Length: 228
Image (cartoon, rainbow, N blue to C red; front, side, top):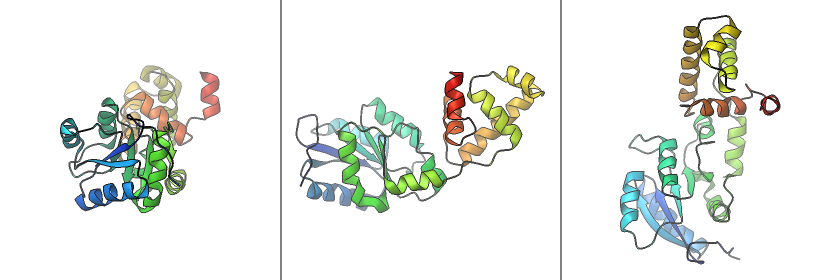
């Protein structure tokens, strides 16, 4: 039995895909309407810029976009999600990535759902969840991988600086608390960011660092909420 999906026209849902493997794109967009007649194949593109160009010429706007995590143009997943979100497109990351650290890095970058390609049977469920307003759907396999994935290994000094910086203290204050120079604090922060980036986490802002610090339990959620 098919499940009704809300869409812009009250009926069908146009699903587009950004992936640089044409055969996979054709296969996915051919299969989805067969599984649920509410789905309609939309645009296929190898990059987000290409998608936006093709979308501009499409007969009907896409209702949701499937996005591969790693594209050959070397673009950042976070930047790709942000560009699609700027266009007001719901985004489902649909990836063949198996590295736990890279999958872990998909959390917090704004995608509405994450599905691994080896879980193709879950894709319909993810699309239905997103179109019904669930903005944080994660497949069971993806959830298991992410929960088991460790963050990067940090030294005690790096953890101490991360904890203080991510929860709001400026470098000068951290130096006073830690009994070191501001330059040492900056060195530790640079090393922390480098290790997270190597781990597959995009950490460019203090908010990004707080997200990974909470996720990796360097900042206790209960302590942080009490502090707030």
